[in-house]
Length: 69
Image 1 (cartoon, rainbow, N blue to C red):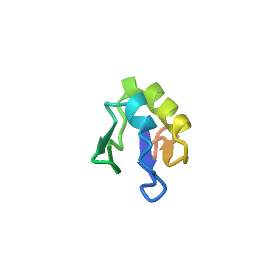
Image 2 (image 1 turned 135 degrees about the horizontal axis):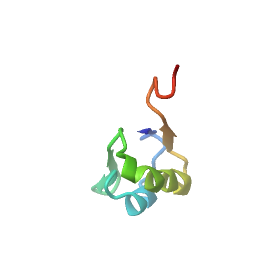
Image 3 (image 1 turned 180 degrees about the horizontal axis):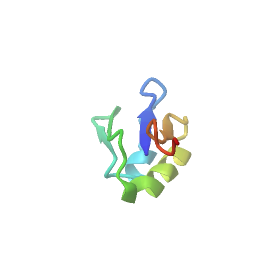
Image 4 (image 1 turned 90 degrees about the horizontal axis):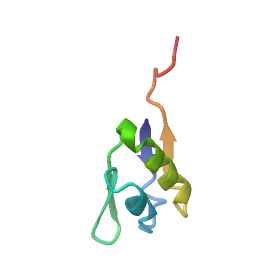
């Protein structure tokens, strides 16, 4: 699983940090740091974090080539 965060859209509500602290981290009041390649054991937490984002700034997807024939 890969994630991308639209940092222009992110408002620092930090819902993602509470739901997936091993993937998302807030530095200061608004600087979000994240791990773009999500470990398998964190997939469900990241899906919940993306769904909980008030501004829908988190995009979740699979790396290119996954599942391709």
